[in-house]
Amino acid sequence: MYFFRKKDSNRPNSFNLKVMHAINATAIIIFLLGIVYKVVERLFFS
Image (cartoon, rainbow, N blue to C red; front, side):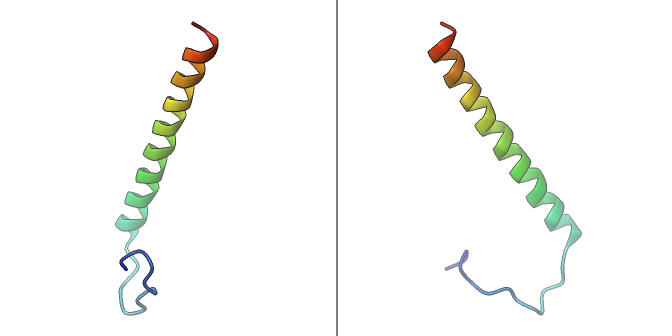
């Protein structure tokens, strides 16, 4: 139930945690775009 718990108001907001999540999301998006590019390249340009 880690993902579905309520936000704890006692925990401080951490700038480092926000930056880590932003970098992680960016990396996932770039990875998915790379997969889509490779699939399109294989299907239409080979």
